[in-house]
Image 1: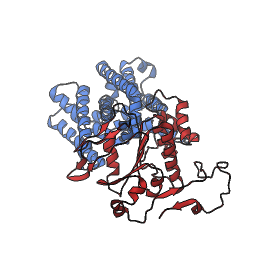
Image 2 (image 1 turned 135 degrees about the horizontal axis):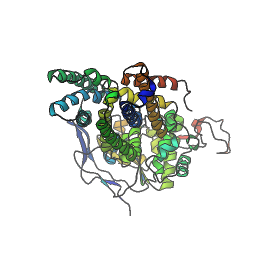
Image 3 (image 1 turned 90 degrees about the horizontal axis):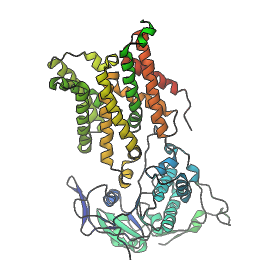
Image 4 (image 1 turned 120 degrees about the vertical axis):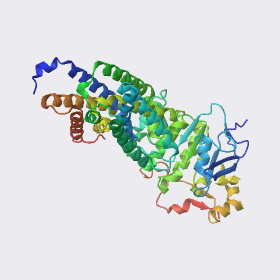
Amino acid sequence: MPFRAVNHPADLGLEVAGRQLLQHIDLQLQPGEIVTVIGPNGAGKTTLLRLLLGLTAPTTGSVWRRPGLRLGYMPQRLQIDPTLPMSVLRFIQLGQPQLRAAGARAALAQVGAERLAHASLADLSGGEMQRVLLARAASRKPQLLVLDEPTQGVDVGGQSEVYQLIAALRDELGCGVLLVSHDLHLVMAATDKVLCINQHICCQGHPEQVSRDPAYLELFGDKVAPYTHQHNHEHDLSGDIVAGACDHNHSHDHGDNHREQQ
Amino acid sequence: MAPFGELIHSQFLWFALAAGLLVALVSGPLGCFAVWRRMAYFGDTLAHSALLGVTLGFVLQVDATLAVGASSCLLAILLVALQRRQKLSVDTLLGILSHSMLALGIVAVSVFNINVDLLSLLLGDLLAVGPRDLVLMLAAAALIAALLYFLWEQLLAFTLHEELAAVEGVPVERVRLALMLMLALLIAIAMKVVGVLLITALLIIPAAAARRLSHTPEQMALLSSGIGCVAVLLGLLASVLWDTPAGPSIVLAASLLFLLSQLHRAPG
């Protein structure tokens, strides 16, 4: 039986200082499902997450959360003051006294960032920080993983890898995933359901279905096509291709393996 | 210069030392949060308003430390509320409040014709600490230490990312208020030691000096306490040997320790 992680019986909306930021939002999440929220800048994507996470109270409607739901949250970015000395391992364990160092290391391993365990949090690059944040969210064994622009600050090459990591985590943890993104190309391939919003829900459904929806095309134009990314090799943290991950020659042009459906 | 042997037996010196060390011990970890969260200006605002607290205490005939403690706590609560709804930047808001409070305090002292030594309020009067002061300081310091101990993990999570902490179940608003009230209490007891103008220095400088030498937040907090204690010892010693004002001497000693810490290369 599908559980309803988040449910809005009525119109969910938020009005701030006379401006309607969100209205008529009605959505529910199923376990194990990856739902991506896309929309133009200022569409209210982050606001929607804040409402669902309970960080902001809606002015209309309500959010229902299954009692006892374990949430893992990955914020858009974490800016740490360099005067705060904290290792990655300690950061993952923070607030989880029951999680031993081994558990924190395992969480880092899940996102391929074991070697960062003793690095200082303030010294991480954008991509490394995203992995660490993901590991922290995963270490809480969440039933629902909420990610706000998980590829923020990650270079283009690493972005699809982040989405693959998220899909892998979903399979491993069996959790639902709700993520906000604006990289339409990458999202299309790694999501079960797309929610296109612009203050309200413009359209929703299967990625291919949404991409043909007039409301979607009006927002994003018809140049954006669903895109299936077939990665044939792996990169490690520094971006190098990992030897042994596959057995063929990498000298080809990358475009060869990317199939565009227009 | 008074003979050192005689001074060892003078009670006021031991009271002064105990008061200084007590304040340094708790201002260490609190100072770390002030540095991590960039609250130096906030500390200034609370400290500058302490003068007004003294005046109110005099008018209402309440002990100065108690009056300052109460007025600082009230102002801290007001600031938390203001920060949430104001449109001005926090910087501007604090800048306005900080100096208005200081000016109001000085004017109030003269209007009520209060018989206090303004200079000792501004720069501290460590050598005048009595047993009654010490008891109050001990109580406040114990309360701060207990709060720090029990809220430590939550304070850290809150400092790293407020929303992440909130989603993970940290009662963010309560933790914020606790931090502000701890600062307000510290200011009430630190006023005797270094005075209204220099409290922020005692908060920030030992923490900044500890940064280079620490790898974990806990290390930094404890080191900061240690450095503060050494500064109190050195400052008091200078005050006794060369008859310099105690509060500024302590701050100078802390600054010297900070400069020394900069010689140490940054930890990896």
